Image (cartoon, rainbow, N blue to C red; front, side):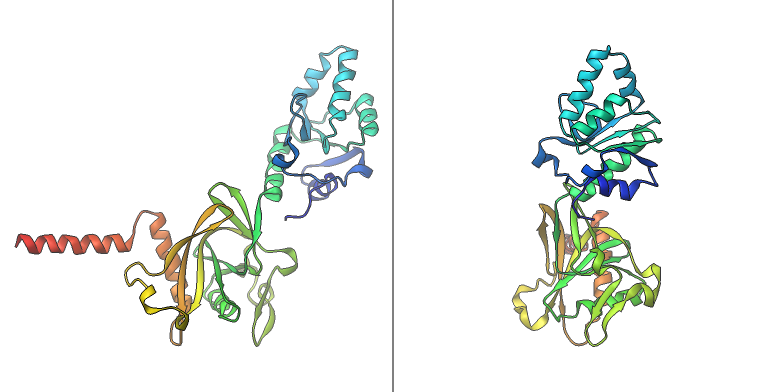
Length: 314
């Protein structure tokens, strides 16, 4: 998902879905895209001579504009388009490339591709594709799960029991996204989406059992491709926690900064007799309540305060 993007990669990914056809420039289609902030140019858009795009789309409206130009202005415009060295020029709406376009694309070594689909359809698909692939990303150690429709990262020291906990959660109907090295991408200023690297997909390492293929063992329903990160659950050894550091009311909650996104985190001490899978499920349910505006601690404190007031009045 985070591999370098090229025109050739886009063609291989979308040639059937978006009905892409090569016109010319396939031999120059390995040039890598870069983020808009690094390149100084936008990733994708319609014909723009002032601010060229890395992918320039020419649809029916752009061809109508070019058709109104006299021959000299048309040739200058075509040269200006390809001289800016876009990574890809895409003709949409069943538009045909002129000989001037093909010649300019060959001179400036710019890949030229056509599609019978509308410009808006192409723009929607490729904008999402580019944003997902070029978003800021980080790899975190842990097991990423979907629990009650929430993305939950189980983290903690090596050998603390994360994989065994993940296996227990899978048995309870929850889904595995990634073991050991999930990758998280910032999709907006307030959200991270995690997925599994291709080499690790479907696999879970459990000490004593080795590598397990969760999809083969439990079926497709046990696997989720990606999910927004809602909660981090840190598994800690109870013996490593000073008793005075555990707040009986608040528990062990904090926010962790990941790619400048604040993610709620709760620490769960592990000890003989503690059912961590139930604790994780409860932590997720509690987080959902908080997102919906209910905080059990505040409700408890409010009740205690009301009781004290009633006692004073009586």
